[in-house]
Length: 344
Ligand SMILES: [Zn+2]
Ligand SMILES: [Zn+2]
Image (tube, rainbow, N blue to C red; front, side):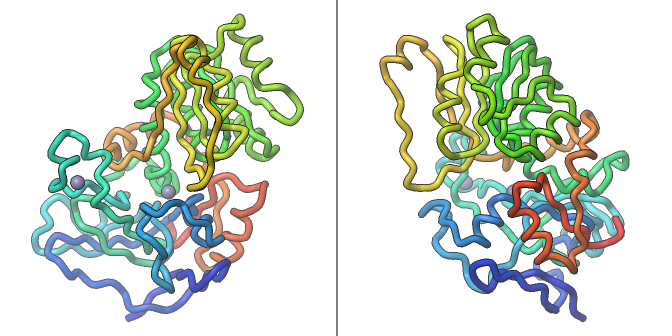
């Protein structure tokens, strides 16, 4: 028995192939029929041949299985699986802590580095260990369930930011991670909420989803907009979700005295950013990073029904058009792009 599965054979070379269907190989495994699966920026980097860092484990094997954000329906369970049954709607974390390393043993399991991302969800079926599988409420559409993984990264960013209600918030970058962080900030009672992005399509989506101030940084000076809206104070929470200059530096400029900056974008390995220690001392702002939300799936799933995420999951291609979907996702017009695998 075969199935469809997408593989990366080389730079910009994604092919949909017929492969053997996965079987239960360990008693604690679950097989999931994928309904929807996302195209992540990290996959686009892989497809474009961009090196994230030496700690990402070196070169991916070729051909590489693609896809790590997905939701679907359980079609088989191993003998040791007690928490899941065939027919249940689930989403799956692409990695989890090892529970054996120093970090895991010292309260830092969210940062465990003894974990590798499991790919392969751009396919009809995927196997996963039950500890990474999470039930989805019946009220959550499977297309929305497929954004649990990127949304968990945004939840982590807000955790790192220490957002409290009534704070002023600026988010630089309205790609999926930045847009989700802004929507969560709104949900958490952000007072002034400002998002900026160079791409018109992303600004339009942010407006449609109810972000009150949407800035085109090429037309309006972001620093001036932020100071106008905050009586010259700046924002208590400044989130950067791009990973490039000038966004990284802008995030430092707009933060208020005593505020918190979170760099949540993945910057290229060689990039350096100028920081003034004197300015940092005088304003006593905190600079933090956010590495991703591997342990936050349960909390993230609760948020799937608190916000109407449907406008953010409207760009859907069938799996058979995976190459076209990737081409589209690489354009400035794209927001979060999903592949529809099964009926949903
Ligand atoms: Zn992702
Ligand atoms: Zn660990």
